[in-house]
Image (cartoon, rainbow, N blue to C red):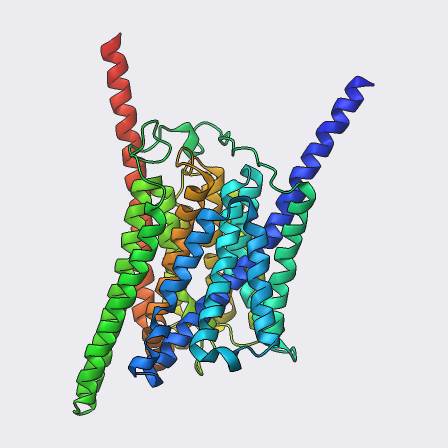
Length: 495
């Protein structure tokens, strides 16, 4: 009887943990959908500001990306175990603002600020839940965010186009999903401390835990000391710097364009704008990735670059301002992409614990090749494989996001960083990079899409980011090999 009671207790414990992980996955799925919508809102706002609101009275909307980043990292840092409740609150305020037509009393700038704040709070709440979760729930949150950022967003878009209240449904569906996560959290006990994430048990030679940690990484027994506020400050400072430089670039080129000239001069200014925007986006991602590498090692830095690549690809895939996007606005092509994204995310989560292969870099390289085949010249020669290319593109993005996010839970990248808030804000660097990449590169990408039905600028930029991911993987392997050699030499001298 005693053995039976013990077995029954163990079963209940495992079942409770699995149920919490499922609820966390659903909440993260809703948060990922909200993040994709936040990207589109902020990017569209900046396009309208650049095109029509050039006066000083419309300067505030240009700072909305910085406001969103500040809210995201502060909520991730401070919410702790209240993350899901904060996410539900943000979505509830968003829905109430839409239903009450609050835009009439707040004005355009105030209403846009409210939407940016609510959306960022939702993502920050999910990250806070990631920071305090156990290993299984972290894996679920990472997988849910990865799937929601692309596959869930596509499904929401495809289904919402046919609904009479599409804007309402775009908020209501994530609200229900996050409410499920918050309800399960409440049923488990308000304020109950989650167990510390256990170090993963990986087979020898298969994962990062079987190898010595990278020198200076979070898994190093003596990592570099940091103050807890440096990670949020780095994210906000990078966002503010990117916003100011983007505004300066636009102001200078707009002044040159208004000076007059022929079509050749205008085309040259447009080309300079594209080059400047893509350079700025890559620089912001590089700054965040370097900080992430110094703070958490190559696994965290690779997630930052994967997030940036997803942000660069967002305008191509989602479209906007007359451009339907790569998968259109509905029909079988969109649902094929949703299925491919789900398959890619499942495969990415399954292989993320095996760090002997740079899965994320290979997925981005596959994405680049597929996008190159989607160019007008290649599509003429390979018109019969368009559906296959759509499948490859969607599955590659879903795979890259899932493998990069879930690797943070299945490997030792976040071990020894600090408290839950520090873990959450460090993971949030990838979302900051993705958001800045979309906002800064959205107009330039649309210009390229309008010119050539795709535009090589974003594709080449993603290729550069993929090279960075592969380079970080090689750097991490080299650091671990050097560490092994030093430790082996020390043991030989000791004997």
